[in-house]
Amino acid sequence: MRSMLARKFFGNALRSILLALVAVAQTAYGQSVKIMPMGDSLTSGYRQYVSYRYDLWFDLSDAGFDVDFVGSAITTDGSPNLDWYPQYLTTFDRNHDGYSGYRSDQLAEIARAVAAGHQPDIVLLWAGVNDIWAYGAGGVTNARFGLHDIIEGLRAAVPGVTILLALNPPYQQDNSEYIEPLNDMAADVAAELDSPASPIILVDLNTGYSVATMTWDNVHQNRVGEAWVADRWFEVLANILPDFDSEPFRINAGHSGAWYDPATSGQGQLIEVVPADQFMFLAWFTFTDGASDSPFEQHWFTAQGNYTGNTAELILHETLGGRFDDPQPPATNPVGTATLTFSNCSEGQLTYRIDIDGRQGTIPLRRVIPGSQNVCEQQKAQAAIALEAVDINGGMDGTWVNPNTLGQGFLIDAHHNTPGETFIFVAWFTYGDDTNSGQRWLTAQGGFAGSTAAIDIYETTGGLFDDPQPVDVGPVGTMSIDFTDCSHAQLSYTLTDGGPGNDMTISRLIPGAQALCEELAGED
Image 1 (cartoon, helix red, strand yellow):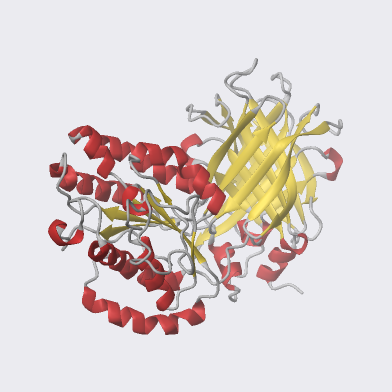
Image 2 (cartoon, rainbow, N blue to C red; image 1 turned 180 degrees about the vertical axis):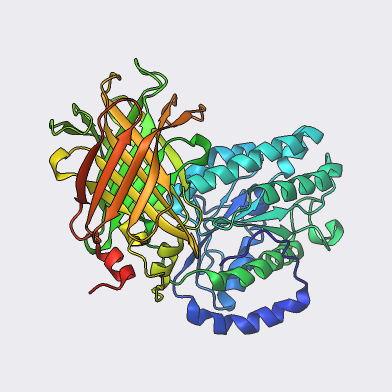
């Protein structure tokens, strides 16, 4: 696993050791890692100077690392002295996203777009000096908001990006006394926003830095300063680059299950993945939009299509005109697109476009059930999977329907959280008579034993589409599911609102989706 938040303050004495170890590390490192240098003139280069990027590129190349500098710019803010940088126009990789004079809020405005365009694995983020230069003490606050927005933008485009965040070196110009509080703030932001899936690692460009010997104008690095700064970046990169997977992350059967955005708890998505066909089905349980004629009503969509690598491009559908647990045929029509991208087994994002009303946006996704990423991780590692000898297992995740009432159905997410503990989550997309849309959705959850789950049914109301508006959740009945095999189950329910109960046989919606269940159960 890549390093989490840490102050990677390596001394020069370690550099030769790291170089000696790199050759061994390359056996686990098989493709170019994209690195995006991002910042102001200290990144872009200024006047005759190219910046630390020149020395860092050749440090990494000489050490045997296969990296690709990416970014939207290939020039500096000036005219480089080619005597100082003899390979600037030949073998040096000039791409970057450094812009002279940019404050952190200006970098935040472009962060998502440049990350989406270049898909960096690692971002070298060096920002903040122009904030305090422009605003003094107020620049520290400006940079705090700017760094938050930069990191949010980078992660929106590349959920698993690793961010190396620089602690600024001293300088001797306007407002230089605010460097220390600027760096303290940057460390606080890193600690606050660091996550295992998208680590933030501090790079100390302050300790040991000399303005007198390492700058030419008391701010920008001279050749001595550029080489010194490059060494600091290199020491951290050499420590983390061998940990990057030699193969890109890929969707697998273990991504099936329940997902949601914690900011809009009370609505979410259930996903089914069929690797044999590289097919994905999604059910999205949400509410009508606040700007609609009928806000606060339950609403659901479905989406389906193929995936490749870590991305699924799906067609979004809306199904209307059905009746609760009734064979009346509904009508299903395409209404937009949904793109799902996963950075690992626990985190991803959903980018949607709804053509009927122009809504579009991006929703971060996390697992509903803590620990339910275990099957995904085991599939990724292609490790042997040993589970208790119970009938219900993680392979039963996915979409189930009653063949007599097509157009409505159930999505199931079942897992052993820890040895001896079980949890199953069921989302039921159906219809109701008391809403303008006619749609209704319910959820059920609880433990299971053997082949049977006896769980409570809940209804969630009062929400708005992709909005943190608090919702109301209350019990409305009970449900029992008894799985006869990996493709069939008997489901019964009773609702407390006076409606009828029913018993039904449910089966897999997608042929072949039972393969993982059979593998986990040890069936032929």
